Image (tube, rainbow, N blue to C red):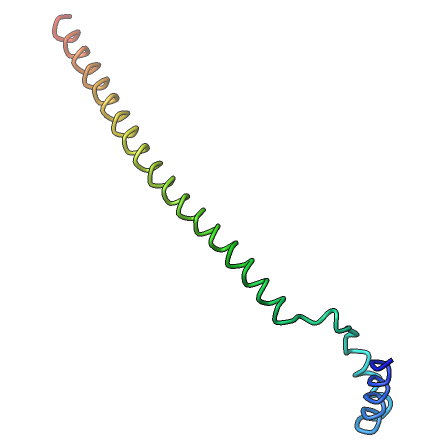
Length: 105
């Protein structure tokens, strides 16, 4: 095979440059990959397309979350205002009743 021949030639050249131990150490550290494992430009383009699509959907979700958060804040403000108004009415009513009871007792 061509890759085995290339590997053998590379090993021989490394032995010349680094010696047998250095060549063996380097060759063991180099991962064995085939051309099927190499990423192509087409792979990167397809990945970019998928990432852009995912990002666009997430941006749409982010906008929806902001809209929901805004609506939640508005409802929370309305409910808080209603609750405080109701509580103040109850407090003043109870205070008036307490003064009336104290005055007529």
